[in-house]
Amino acid sequence: MVTREDIENIALLSKLFVDEKDLDSLTEEMQKIVAFADTINSVEVKSGEFDNINNLSNAFRADEVKESLPVGEILKNAPEQAEDHFLVRKRA
Image (cartoon, rainbow, N blue to C red):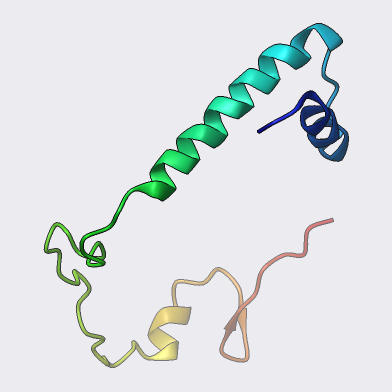
C-alpha cells in the first residue's frame, strides 16, 4: 500500500516539489502502478524461453582481416603532413 507519506518521501529524495493538492492523486496513481507491477509479477511463467521468441539469428558477419593502404598513398591526400602523420591545426 502506497501512502501519502511515501509520496512525500519519494518527492523529497527526488528533490521534486509536489503541491499539497496533488499528493492524493499522486498517491492513487502510484498505488495503481504498484498494483499493476504486482499483477505482472504474479503471472505464472510456463516456459523460460523468452530470449528468442521471433527466431532471430545473429546478423553480424565474421571479421575479415584485409590489407590496409600504404601510408604514403593515404598521406598524399593530406594538406600538411610530418613523420607519416596528418598534421592538424590546434584550436585556440
